[in-house]
Length: 138
Image 1 (tube, rainbow, N blue to C red):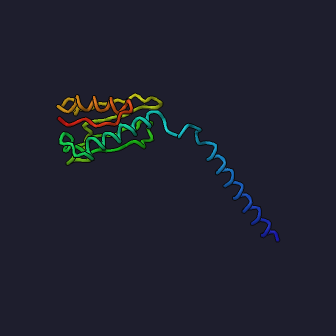
Image 2: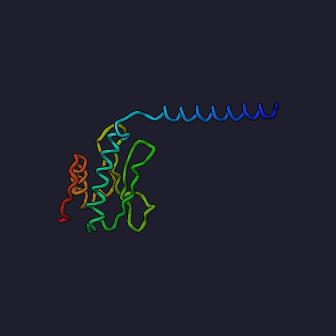
Image 3: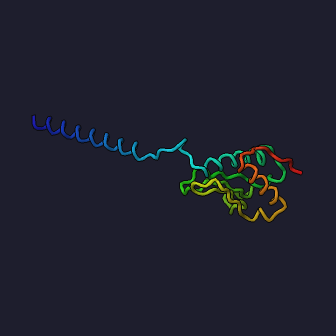
């Protein structure tokens, strides 16, 4: 009888602990509209457009690069990178990112000093404003 009562108390204690844990997890989730920061929303739009216009279209100006998506970064800086096609683990040649609650997009890297740099800047600026159109690769 003592063993049975001890087991019941143990089971009740475990159930109460689990219920408490679940309640804590639910209350610790931030309440927000859609759960996405302005920076993530902007970067999702920019990344989708970059992939569609630069890579899915087989644009010749971007054939020697690969797209590395890091939108789900835990750092609060959603971003994507362009890296050398033959060295996916190599140093990024272009970084496109946004920080925190801002929808301001930052673009930097040595690729901006190449012939395609002005196009990158104009494409990113257009996509950041919500226009997902592609330009022709003249």
